[in-house]
Image (cartoon, rainbow, N blue to C red):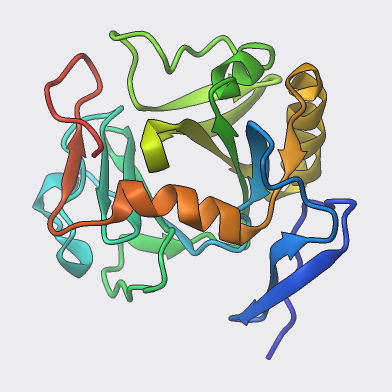
Length: 226
């Protein structure tokens, strides 16, 4: 199988590794500070798709209803769907199951996009240094296409285990390591630390557990992640 390599170069030695689909995914790093209040995790290996078309509302890929409006996200069984524009939706598989999409409107972009998560109470303070987007205010969407250091990215806000907030950033692969360095630099005063896939999975499991689909309204809606 072809070996796949992340565009992010985390300068820590993996302690435990999970082999999946040609990736060697660090579950934890040697010397990883597991009790740090804010951490960053490489998600570049996460399967990703973009779906485009004039009538996305009629699609039910893998049984998942796509978000109805830009800024809305759905979380269901580890699948994250974020409506980026009226004609485009992004999907990531953050759980163990990897769906198969047969619709011609779907394109696998796993190797085209870098992705990284920043988790912790000060995560939006970090983002504020790099982008003008506000994912905190009640009038803000929970997902947005926005510039990060002048590079347009998909940003998704999620609340995970114990209600701890975090965001996922996905952008063009060639900028992957740049995103990592920018986040680490912006988060230095908050003692941001790299963490492996295991810590991220434990956090996101709370947001993706349970039966049925979780709906998040972008503008002060009543539904929220539980």
